[in-house]
Length: 487
RNA sequence: GGCCCCAUCGUCUAACGGUUAGGACAUCAGGUUUUCAUCCUGGAAAUCCGGGUUCGAUUCCCGGUGGGGUCACCA
Image (cartoon, rainbow, N blue to C red; front, side, top):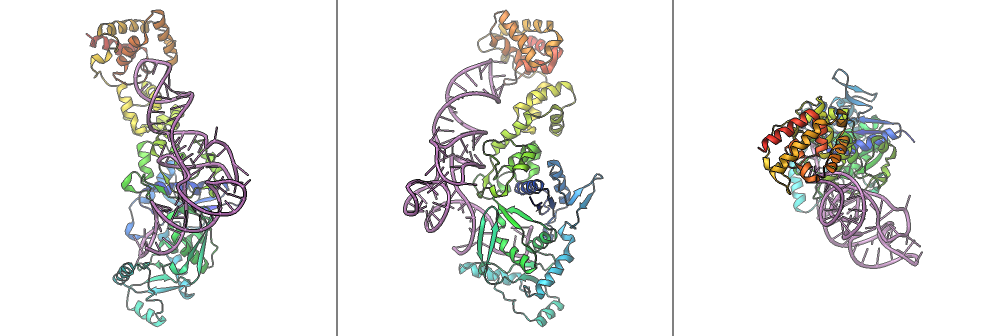
């Protein structure tokens, strides 16, 4: 397999869009699978939308996710942003002189031209085109300006942009996921490639950078398909090889429109902050629009890398099924090592996770949550004081008197238990169940009060699990309090 | 509106001409259980419509319908 050089080209907005993560994943899978490189390039050519600190937070998020680019900006061991790779700079605003050179070439070849039209004129023109139901498109007002006039107007200090001159004919986009898509050049606008502030537009920068950075596969969202013919024209005008294109389907809102902030979380950081595990998120997003086998849901990262196949990516958009994400996150949560889960839980819990009792509670409760941000409220009852109504202690088929009696008896029994019985909840369960059978008691009248005495909750995990968490001493303490509570 | 893309259960998806159209999430019903959760069993649930091609279409072709994307000196 030929090594693929793929690239992710986000604009630094301060967060990573969930759809961006998906293309990043596909880029990463393809690069790693073929022994190639995954390259990060920052598209910051819009000076009006600069966000302070955006690059750093973007890099930190990728680091958290474990998707580190082989080339491009990164955070080094000293917490500084550095660039790695031979095709830099990898930030477009640092490449202005490069773009300039190619703009000059296009101008010289007459594949591009200066345009002095004012914003007002362009708006008026488009307005008219819209009212006459024509496609809004530049009318080439400045196409045939003479060299002298252009020169004179520039020297006079007039603002201008440079537009590409779309040739006649048709352009075919060969797309790995969509097949061959044909466009009539006559439908395509003379796109601005150099803005009046001297910055290139995306369309020019992406072409030059992809060529110079030797990108073999351009994987991006489907919304780019309509502008791809412009890019292909530019590749050809500049004498570059055209890379392989793959336009992947969009991620959708529940109403099937393009995923938007209005309708829920679109930032990877939002999901991380809610306590979705990176592994679960990667599994979920990485199998949206692409499923290796169709008979399984959980795939580890290495499997996805090995099984990924660009040509098997679905063509239609995908609604994010958040309930399934929850389920998947729970699957990962349950199967984590204690050490790991303590570390990932730390930011979400204000209790001391290094305390053995809290750690045991964590082991019990992690099965019962979908996201880490639900953990705090699950763990709090383990350290909370009594707050329940004493009537809660009474099993529905029983009386307060009986509850009290049962608690006294089970308390005595627990006091006599050997420490060895507290090794795990199963051992405790065996003992308690044997006790119930031996004394010819029924489960409900013993276990319900015991569980409530330990948890203080109407709903909780089992009394055996709770006893294991609290240990003999603390367990007895809680039972005693409950007995007192019953009067 | 022009151009382009897309179309299997509610949702994510599998089935590269022949399957009782499979799996997962969600949902419903039962079971296990002291409660909750888990777990187990079972159920309901889909090939957008119409034409072709073919012995045979979810699958290939055409048309329709529906949905989406895009038409900036934003990416």
